[in-house]
Image 1 (cartoon, rainbow, N blue to C red):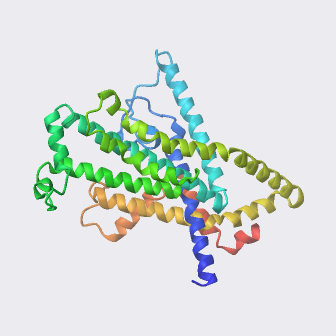
Image 2 (image 1 turned 120 degrees about the vertical axis):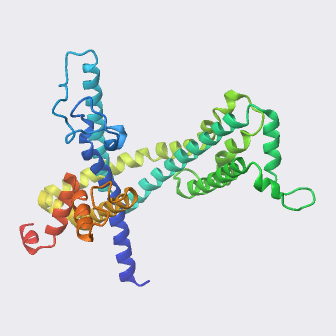
Image 3 (image 1 turned 90 degrees about the horizontal axis):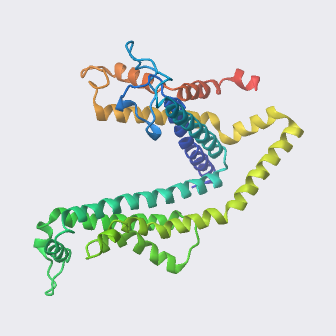
Length: 354
């Protein structure tokens, strides 16, 4: 790979890394910052981020007006205000992540990915523990029979074929969860920002797989129900250590960035700073990539739900499908702004104006 190809690849990675914050902001705008309009309606198809809903287009003419004199009206207002503040903070955080440099973006995504590994591990471990408790934990004979089927090789060294046939559901759930936990543990070891020690690298896979193995033994029910929580303590401790140890450097980086921006504005003006950040963030290409990914998302959704569910005839032409994708792909303010900007930014009159 020559220098030009390497530079182009790095620019492409930089563009891709800045797209997820735009999706997050777009979802917040889609739900109307958590403010519910048309109180009392329930439409599960419009449930989006945080379980919040926006009913701008589904207000019935016979809908009962919102009564502020009702008993729970003030709690609803307070709850809506809390959701509004949460949505605003989400937009601010997403914008801050969007403006980070590439190296800092990679660190943020590594931190989020490590949290995702812990969350997925906890969910799968908790599901398997509940499955074992509900099916075989109450019967010691079933438990010992399950343990015998986990052994793939007998004393004569031949594979136990009946173990692959009998108890197939429990067998597959056990080994599938073990393989999944091992994969998540190795992914966590490669992306977490905490300290790296040989002992910790050995304990992390054991911590991830411990609930799957320990639940098949005769442990008290109070311990079995909390095995998934106990297994997540060590990875969470590593993440918290990394977050606390780097908190001072994060604060220093924020203060330095603000100071540099203030100095830049004092020396060259605000327009020069905006032009520099516009070029550094590669905004037109990021918006173009965001719009293309939204169209791909809607195309996949359309392929899953079918043409008839989307209001398109089954024998509809490609023209109708493309028209539907273009309309649904531009349904929010963010995506319309993205489409307009990335088309406008390539015209010379725009650069002359800047």
